[in-house]
Length: 304
Image (cartoon, rainbow, N blue to C red; front, side):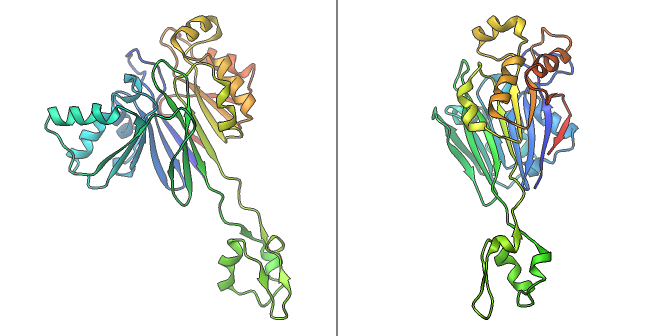
């Protein structure tokens, strides 16, 4: 099991040279998820070698421009590239209206299925599931309706303890999958060999919690508890905490408090305000509360 995160952009809304707005590319269990799509995301995807055809699911946290204005461009580019595979977009209610109006007025309807999953619930919801991965919303508190997203691997197969298996000649290769699936083995004399005596527990499932723009919100802790990695916005340092409250954003210290309370393994912080020239101060502030903190940087890759 592995989890790989590429930061495509990690700065706040004000346009600046070499400061791209929020977008991330997550690879988990052979899925390729795009998380948020600020202006210029498709250029960043090209820059960092992400194949457009891999993206089948896009998750938009909220409808502020630095998190969603790149979406229409990416959807249109898929059309120009003659995409045929369906594309699923998960985002706040209204996202379908925004995109379809742009497609209508530009006469640029997609030739591929474009499927919207509009969100409006204020409690955590399961919004995607297959055999290996689940995705839940993380309700946040911002100036508009906003969700974070929790991506979770499902528990995998048990592992064969070959030293134990080789003690029994009756266990053949064709029996291995049943053992991995958790079944006991019955010998010809009727003796039941317990599965836990023949196998080892599967690897601990990994999870990634993405918390977009939000004020300090301890209520999310139970949802993201024990996550492998948490990304949490840190628009301000604590010297601007009053501004964070007014704009409904978080400070680096507050993000670290969430990470500590949730007992996550790793914290990544980003969405830095343009008023700060040295983002190292964000890491220093967060590490006073939660040591295992890293800065999001455009183009940086995290693997777990």
